[in-house]
Length: 252
Image (cartoon, rainbow, N blue to C red; front, top):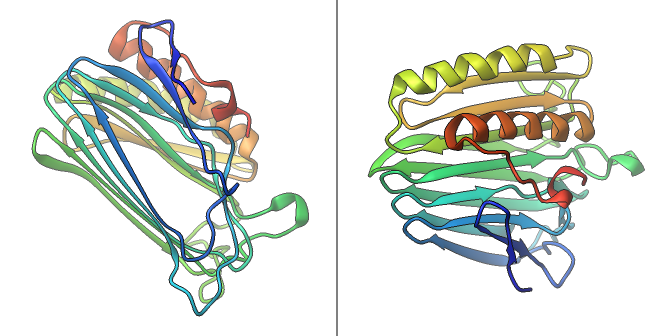
């Protein structure tokens, strides 16, 4: 589909999968390049469904490479990943940010087809994410979940929660004092949004150039609402304008 203009001058682009989801053995690749001073928002048209894999085939694999040039901005805000029973999926994301580049990026993981009572019935979910800012790594995340081998309801993993997410906010070149100030502001909001019986939020500054927000939740609706709150606060603080969310990214 064509790109759609955003009020702030950027372009909104939707990712489509004509098969309706990720099939067992799929080997998918996505390359995103944001030019100098450019602004793009990338989202999905709905939740990404990870279908059952044949145990004899390779796990489905998604490799994503993202480059944001000087003073560019990428808002990558996909809908949740939903791993079906028997799914085997690996995701590897590499993000490179040049001087002055900005990033808004989250990943939300569902437990499965919750409406059917299909919780944590997948075989493998492995997610890796690396963010390099101005030539230096600032974030490295690695998650490997095998519910059939290790129960995710353990307090060392998800405990009583079903959904989880990571939300990275970066702008290369902003001094660490500013990030610590923003971390404090967002942590106040995190405390207000946290309801121990429903959802927990936490905010931490990275070593440089950004911060990460994490959450555990029993419902996707409360998780999506919180992500939008943090996105709005961060966009106002970093760019002095309102966030412009694509409707589908907060309603799946």
